[in-house]
Image 1: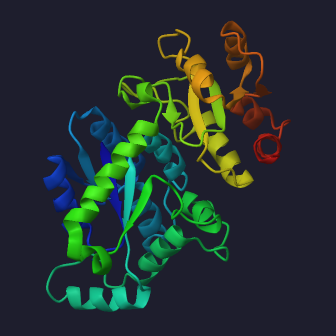
Image 2 (image 1 turned 90 degrees about the vertical axis):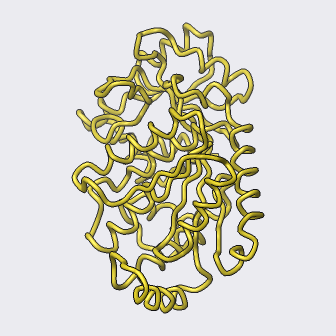
Length: 332
């Protein structure tokens, strides 16, 4: 079980984390702003560590903190779309996000000012951070269209309707913290029950996303691993993985409802997850590249959308992959 806590400073994350650790007998992992030039790798290492554990793990801050704090204090994160890729991994492992948020931005900032008098805080003013967290949760159609994943989420209704997200408000829930924690743990268990069970296994690398409300299975060719045990499909902040993710962002295609895999595993065997997922969930298959399409024929899958490999589209520029994906995915 993986539970991720997010929210502005002073919103009750640490208190909630203690209760969750107590009830689950889990591990607490706090991610601060370390190795600023390697945040993507740092956050990748954190979720890999969490996925390998045989105990529940509570992660205090993850990719949303980088996205929000970077856009508030540093202009922009060098990895504006890391949230899309990280979300695919989180959903694979049935992770639950809990957003610790106040009722009011102004009241929380006033509370934070008083809090600074009793303990050391990294920032003097968290008004912008708090506003962005609140907008990310509730949604804001007036939010500018930007390059960051949180810009897309905010413009398209926020996070409050997602089954794998809960909101914690210290004023409302702090009086019965134990009961809220119980509810969160039950929700985390439910999310895992709804997942394609083999995907929960750490060593089943060749599948990302989850089967809850599944509509599409995106199938690439074969992963080109750069690091030990990092064989996740469409998870590399460069090359075809990044280009495809950029096309999805530009076309405003959500991550929900999509699972990701490659036709072949890192050891060149065919990915048996594909046939199993189709048998039980019947998503539309979208292949990227000729080898992925060939694998569908080997598996006896006759109905699929065949698109070009993202590397080809990027390199030669003859195919507008963003427009094609917009037509294929958003035409319903």
